[in-house]
Image (cartoon, rainbow, N blue to C red; front, side, top):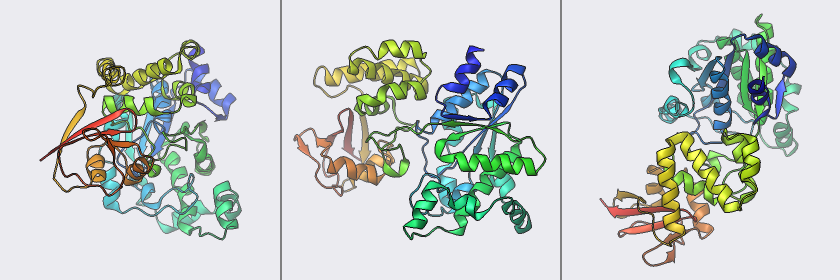
Length: 387
């Protein structure tokens, strides 16, 4: 009973229909629990891992989790969380981005017990007639009433017909996999409700919905790959630890609740400690989740060595690069930053230092010309040597 209550409350903003879902959970019925993620970038960040953790919770209770890589929907592009039209991705971009998606979610769920799908399986064969029949279930008024769409229209900005199709596609995913429950962020509510509508039209019982919150990234804005303020599941342990230590103190409790499974009573006690101690515990918990306790211990020792004793971490990552290469390209290739946008923000904020000369990197276009150690933000280091 306690496990079910936590399932329905921790990291949850809204449940549709809560009473119905709770009855199913108490009955012992094995549910099919769906989560889809579009591969719009190569790495999944811990903001997106909030519903993946919820998938794991369901899996531990014996339910069937269905993870869908949106290889077809990502070509169209979801505008749910965007204030402008999302560009279409090429099939080649999508294929490149999705290469390690199953591996990444495997850090949190048991892949052998999960159902892993790509939505091109059922979306690509749809005929124009079938799409037209699905579209008939919805009105244009429903779509344009959404806050971000209404805002764009009121400002005279373009909304493409392509964007209208996205909720149909995500909704049909639920029909195709016969989902009992779908997980998603609050920005996905319209799309998830579309799944309930289509399931009813196709003679299925409408899925229940669990909406999770959207967390802030390293710069205080909503975590987003396009803004480069993310913590990737694929980050190296010391880099992941350092990024968490660089976040605002006000985000620590929220991250404990949404991004870990430390019992909330214990979190309350942790939050009574010095903010730095609480944040170090958070960093260790998150690194342990993705890399194991041994690597988390090493990352913490690394941090203490660097910042309590004023040195460079013993295991600071060392990479080789061609002389003349842009620092931005080197760091993106090595996975230390997510985008040139993140690099530009770091440089403009004066957050990148060349330690040998104790000089700030001042240009986003700066190039690698000699062996160097970079301090990136407060807690990340990278040694670069000539290839």
